[in-house]
Image 1 (cartoon, helix red, strand yellow):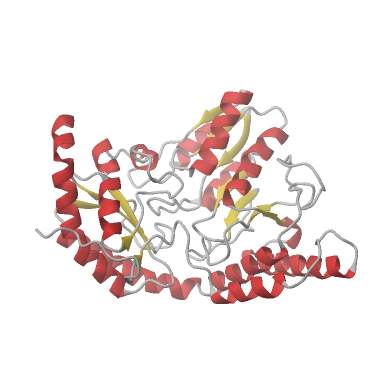
Image 2: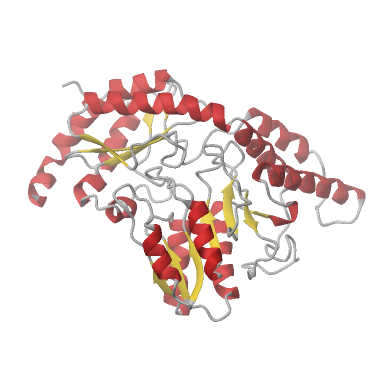
Length: 403
């Protein structure tokens, strides 16, 4: 078996990590450049400030139209992590006496960590409904937890960033509304990949991030129902309905709105193309590599799985080692969430699904985007055999010790 070829710095590379961040759209870049020429703080009253404010408000209206909500319900943040923190902490603090937080066990760490902090530092109690072998929340178990009158909020992500499984968000929102529990969903991975309507009954707050859909890094939004009770994280100038103080980045907000509008408009066409690519990638990798197993829901319906997500476990491999070998061969992918890559621990998502620790440690995520092509799949399939063989040889002593 030949060694993995290490590509030169200038050699073409294959990008299969769109779930971590996807390249900025040219239209969004131009919108940012145009808006950046306008001087003035959007909160200032002079002409320059009013021009900047107009950019912000037009972007807000554009985002609201794309997501089927009111403009006043769009609260700009510095990204998905801030929006998630604002949602879970703000709803918990505003709860009238409720001290229990219901969350799924497969949330992104931008939800897990702030809810853990609320439990450790402020005495909240966390309850987690069961998930099935595909990582989908058991709605009946969640309903059982909702019967507790002490609930402050419920948070379940729309689609999982590691395995692509889509949750029954509308049904969960309805169950929460029936008992008066605020419901938040992290929709970062869903926008542009699934048909998303933020106006569903029972949805209190939803998180969106710019750089996941072709906008700039460092901007996002929390969609907040106008009747929601939510306390702010930041205090200062009172911007964004007093929920998020701080001077708004008008250029980034403008670029974010353009990218989101295009992502929503092109979603159906992109979905069909990505499904074809994903099926090709899964079929070819599993046929080429013995012991390769697809994780998450194997279906392709919009209620089952994200169209561009492929999570595959490679038997007898350490995911970090395999990732670096593929990187040396010019293939860029992930061991799961980019925010936790490099941490030598099995995925909490896979463990919650019942996947054993060895398979969880040997899982890579290949995520496709609007720039992905069949040539990218060709390159991956060509590089994998040597990388897997080398990773298995390197990991065999540790595998033997665990057995």
